[in-house]
Amino acid sequence: MTRYPWWKYLIILLVVIPALLYALPNFYGWHAAVEVRAPIGTIIPPVTTLQGWLQDAKIPVSSVRSDARGSTFFFPNDNAQGLAETLLQNKLPANAQVILSQMSAEPDWLKSIGGKPVNLGLDLRGGVYLLLRVDTDAVIKHALEQDSGSLRTFLRHKDLQYLAVNTTGPDTLAIEMASPALAVEAQKVIARQYPDYAVTVQPKGIIDVTITPDAAKKMKDDALQQAIVVIRNRIDELGVSESVIQRQGVEHIAVQLPGVQDTQRAKSIIGSTAQLEFKMVDDKANMADALKGQLPPGTALYYGLHNSPYVLYTVRC
Image (cartoon, rainbow, N blue to C red; front, top):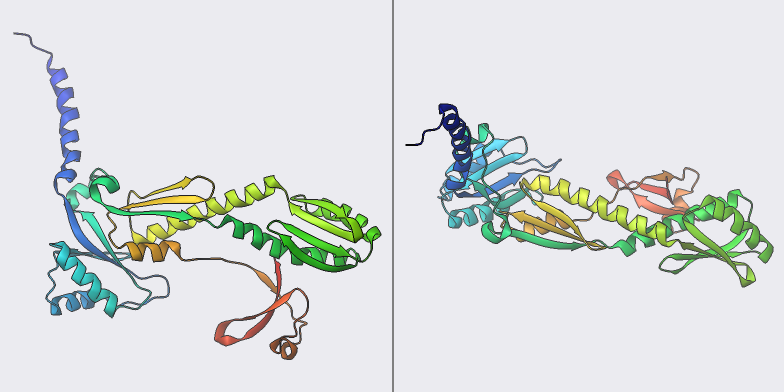
């Protein structure tokens, strides 16, 4: 009978036993769960109050887990999960996040040693698949709107008199100068100051300022990458593990959220629009005239905290 040295058997045991241990989470299955999250600035009742609501409605709760992001309620079946989601959405503030999901039923001692089930993906586990389109054309349009104000300020500082600055195409501005001679001079200084634009002089003192293909491509790529970062941060709010966020083509982002069942909630959180801009306040503007619609060139009227009016420059800082 063939025998092997004892140390070879020991190596086999050292490999097989941990492998079996970390395979255990896959045998525990998944729990129907409802996650309650409170965005910054939203106050929700304590978890004991939420439990009381569920008990009064005779909705069975298997267990509750709370952490810094909120609370997660586990239920014995999908029916109880659906009833709990409806109840909590009706009782909690409108901007509180009540999310349907499926979570691993593995015990805490397995989680403490890093055990977790294999990600089954959407085909086996179910979940939400979203294909999002980033409006990259709006990025170019927004850049033109901002730079048109910047060009007006720049030409005034250079003492180059212009008559009008208008958007004439999806990526083109037309500057009408006071004379053809000024147009030639302005073309040179604009080309030096704005390297991302192709500047050409047309007859009758018209200057065409067009975003170059390389600059447009970079703007669109940056917008797509920024959108991916924003989506990933919002998915972190959902508490979804093993999510997949991938760029598809020139202007699309594919999002896979395994285990998430509330499609509309996921779409509302991920798809909401967010934009941050900094604008200078025009302290010299006459507020009485501004409220009547008589605004200085290159400014707009905005309302802040307690509905206080402000006259802001439309050019980005």
